[in-house]
Image (cartoon, rainbow over all chains, first blue to last red; front, side):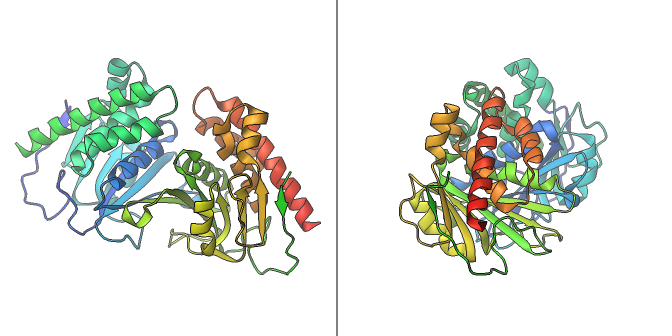
Length: 205
Length: 205
């Protein structure tokens, strides 16, 4: 259940959640701070998207002075075409686990790009086109482990993009989740995917 | 102990292991097949290199038709300058866990770039400038777990580049290793770093 949902009725050329890529770049950023597991979420999203034979995917992270600060980010670029330039430039979708990451990166969203936040961590929403979910709280309460918040968010983001199937996501979780945590992560991704679908349905109306 | 070491006495402008970056790009690829943990090794290498305030680092992986096949790869680009183009183009160093990955990627090495292989998996060396280590066997025999072969390889690669300190590597292992496996991974990275240093010393003479 999204805690915060703003409708945006304007017809969008792009940036509309659930839309498939039409030969264009589709850029997604996962951001938070060190412990949020944003790289693993981005790797899983990329691998799941890459299982679709029509899609090319590049996943990137930066380190060093360019990337300093408390925020951590991992980018995914998806396209039906060969991706020559792998850096994300105009985001279709941004996930932010912290207010700092949100404030730092929301300006990289396309006009009408979608902001997805942990609604307990990010309380000041800088743009209207956003969804808030209590990822960390849900991870603790429904899976018994706050560490799987990244995989709940991954599920929600995957559903919101419409680019990644539930089955591909499950296959990737089975191979990428740390040994012994597969079941918890499968539960987490299911919860997230369902949250994303529900939010999308409410938004589209 | 390197099982295979070929000396290359030619003076190299670049591609020389142990040399620091001089404002140029330093590109490293980790390759193998699905289960070898090459992405995690590349993420750890990048994060450790990024702890050096003088270095910028971008870490990338590709999925989809472009990247199809049984091989898995993860690239790291390191530079003292801002990295505008994050795709690896001319590798300074290539790690290959399988013959297939070796055969597929060695042509991406710079002239005099260094090939590092698991010597039990890669038996046909396509170039002379190479080191072979029994990463998987050592992981099993000395750490009790073949899964840490990636971290032994990471340690060796880090030592061979000369770009990443042992301490930075240890700090990253502590935060990135799957929970409960920190000690095994710290042991693995130490074994690898020592192997790399020893091989480098023998090579430089």
